[in-house]
Amino acid sequence: MNRRTTLVAAMALTAGLALAGCSSSDGKPELTVGGAFMPQPVGDMAAGFLTVENSGGTSDKLTSVTSAVSDDVTIDETKKQKMREVEAFDIPADGELDLERGGNHIMFMALKQTPKQGEKVAVELHFEKSDPITVELSVKEPTYNPKKH
Ligand SMILES: [Cu+2]
Image 1 (cartoon, rainbow, N blue to C red):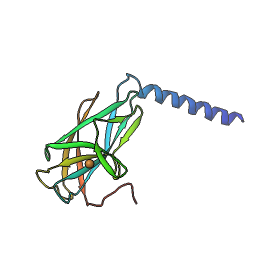
Image 2 (cartoon, rainbow, N blue to C red):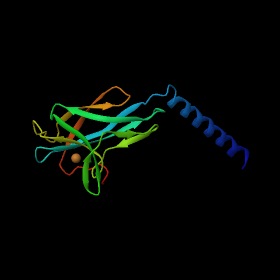
Image 3 (cartoon, helix red, strand yellow):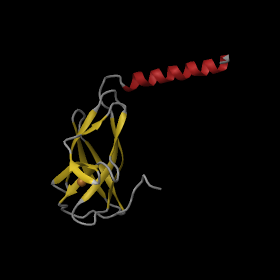
């Protein structure tokens, strides 16, 4: 290793330590929600997908979801192509929770109205530790899947 390489390595290490120190400063989960969408429903139920990123040094849990479009909203996991309601989804410290097509999802039963492509559906996410977060799901075409291109 020459001197230049050593210097770069030392700087990278310092930057890494500074970042780690910052993100876990007060030991709280720091949640950001992204990529929220709902494929346009074909019947009276719908699914919702999103990502919850946690940049804090403490884990959290997504415990429930509420919305004006349905009184019966659940969080479901999919295993062996069957879905099952769960109590909560883990959001690991410095990690993320991915709700995506074919996997974990938000489920809206008995829709009071049928959201159309281009509209937005507001939902409130409830967590074990963090305050609730309101996000808007963009209603997309029924086959929309951002993970497949
Ligand atoms: Cu489901």
